[in-house]
Image 1: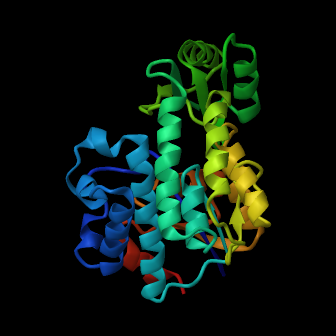
Image 2: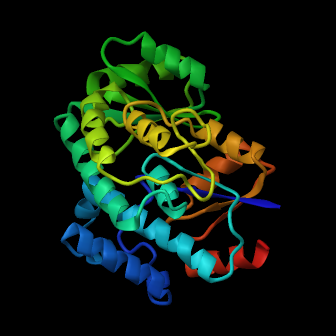
Length: 308
């Protein structure tokens, strides 16, 4: 049995996340303290007590989720959990995966995603961009509808069969939602996000992100990591930099990433972060794959007991 690890992106955060683990796992508290020192503010306090709008700021959410996810990965190993044979992360989670795999130093990764978050926040003025989840249509049809709408809008996350997130200019997203509804979408949901991520409106931010990545040491991962942009395995530091830059303005091909993971020998997948969003998506992508989340004391104990 091979184990794959997946790391969540924005949306998995909530005030008080991992509180039960913070009471029992020094590794988590140490990682939050280290992240706080790097950032210059008490990240652990924001996670513990909010306020929610502060935690939901992209430049805060991203280091919070990365620190929590990397700590959970280390707790898993310290508890004797089996090592993964392959890993992937959804959007921001790709940085968590590369950190866990030894490509990025933890403090470098914390600072990098904090700055990435600020770039994403500032790339498009408030109110001018939007994202929406389209349920019940296949990827190709959603992409085709977006192509036919005036303005900038495109598929941003191919999350699972029948679940695509679109991103772009606010009016274009609204028009695409209407077109998708007429085409038979079961449901369309506007997302509470601070910007239109993973579309061409992030191109300016991607250029600035390249400069940040060029200044950070990146090593070949010790555990294979799958890229969001092409669902292929990371090969070398130059390729990692290129894919992380492109990821900001191109779609997250999550269904394909999971398919690559399963084809690579993973029969069990562990979601390494707060929440169970990726676990739910996995079950929609392949019902035969076994999935566990480890974002609480109870969930961690169950997963450790079931996976040998």
